Length: 409
Image (cartoon, rainbow, N blue to C red; front, side):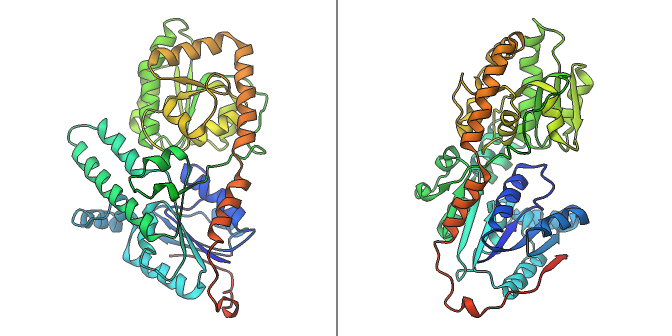
């Protein structure tokens, strides 16, 4: 089947959650389908990243979104009903580009990741379409609004309302819908949300595998450090949990590893000598291997935390919030430890630091859990079967496949 995949970002390199999911699913879907990868990008694309994607994508087109176009589009979004996130990514020159792709490639199915991309194909009623919501953006925005500053809160509340309406509309317009967890599906406001199929992420246990290394850090947090839920999490960890830990063990240190650290994250290292902010690292596995305990006290946000799956796959004991574990589904006390208040996180951390056998028990159970539960091949196969439910167009056999094409515009 000729499958057009529409993404709001290049899915490689794998430094963000949406890229990780898109990359692994598309790579496996390419075994069944001829993939045309259509990506938007507001950054310069490296040739080696394109070359890597060409190993499994038959066609690639990347449309560059310049800064002035983005600012102009965001300004006009104020006067439309589109969510700002959709307005940020929807541009006329990109619309013309995807219209050209559809005319030339003649896709038999379209897969969109996130509602950010759906505006490009929402009116193509003749095309079978699948939307991967990933997570419930409206609920994530709603949670951010609750903790936002007074001047920002009205804007985030307005964006929440727009996202709710838009998510509901896309559920009506698309043929199939998938989401990353049952928790996120239940947070959708549409009365037909039960029809959305849950397809969780996987974890590459051949890549993320236990390794022996010097433990230079006691605690670790990883992620895109410009992402508000991650920023909120490390602020909570450093400002509210670590002081309780240091009251008993003042030497405990923390590594915060991940791309694009926000200024508030960088300041943590400046103000707290026991905190290290590495920024982007070439191989995130080195960060996992260098620490004893993974701590992710997620207070806001939605979706499934890939960082937890990766840490457990590398045989790290993990401490997280009930909010994050609701999507993961690990058994508290057996495969993972759950905190609610700062004192609970501190107690978990201190107990694990004091008890190597408990660290080993929890880490071993976590590793077995992710091996048993999260598999990219199974996720891609479920998505393939869902999209293949639609009959091919009656004249599909006479439509010739275009030659391999890779363009950046």
